[in-house]
Length: 456
Image 1 (cartoon, helix red, strand yellow):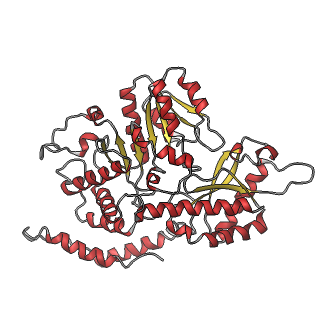
Image 2 (cartoon, helix red, strand yellow):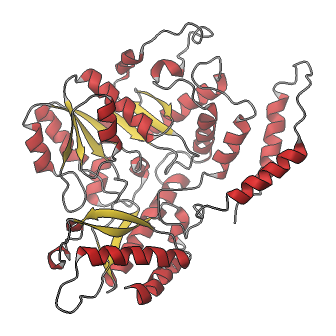
Image 3 (tube, helix red, strand yellow):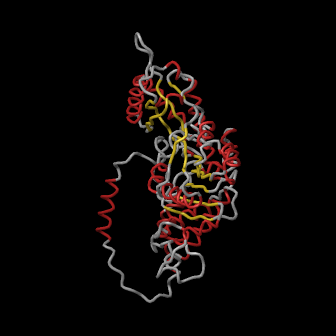
């Protein structure tokens, strides 16, 4: 099941890389200890059996998507050199490849003029976005929805920024009336619009948030770490489509190539529409920025040493599959979205499951429809217990889902009939981000149907 045929391609690529340094005098490299290396790698392979099968379509739980083979190979190829994209001294070629790859991501959102770079992941990218927000709107608060990633609250604390949460509507999106009430206080400097929440894939109404910006003058940061690439998809619903269409009007965007971008961890990206925010990064280094008058990526990044291999892998992937509508990459996103809609339709038509709102991206949230016990209505505690039973039974059947604690009002069709022991309940969550999920939907549904017979 693990793709291995491309390993031969890597050997040829390493030989071509070596040819570029053929003019160097010979050196006595340390003995590679082949036998011992083989033993250690065999042991590592054995240890790695203790993982869920993240690469397989029957893993439909957390946001784990295998890197594309070209990304895996390009990363390994770069490791023969191990470039550092902090300064051009340590990564000339890989720095150029990073600039090209990041420019392609920015163009995907409609930006030609911008400031941006790769980083370790969404957390670091959001840190830089909120740090710049603090510098441009000092003493002003950051607000994000209750379903936004917890990193915003945590980062705001690190940056000593006031942070407030905005209530969500029944579709898991930022509630605009609640947002406007907070804006009327006059102390909000930045609104974080989440373009695909990690719990449900809900897309905040960015188009309407931008309209409020005209009145209240705040900064808009788009946390598109999970959903950003869906700007290329042609099968979004109307509300998500309208939101993604306005991304170019935001002040900053975060997207994670190590999620839908088919990259190894960790590869995040931060983009700023106004390139002049680079002034906040300005610093002196006594030994790293003297080899070239060109921009060193460390001059526009809070991180110092960064893996050039990540840039090489991303560049290679985008070279193979350009970030364009109707291309191979975009069609892979559309397949995941189609798989989510297919699963949602099956769940909704069945009498065994409670469904939340229709998925906006490729995440489906649902719960078992447990039978009412004699004398009382089904309550949230019973549904939570049934969700955990289904989670365990599905895993034994080969299907790996995830659990999420979500508001009861995310299930509007049934919320009024549920006895509430609490305002949240444990639900099942399926992230269908692999294109192969579309082809495996009948198998996934068959396992869920079998589990329903014994656990609901």
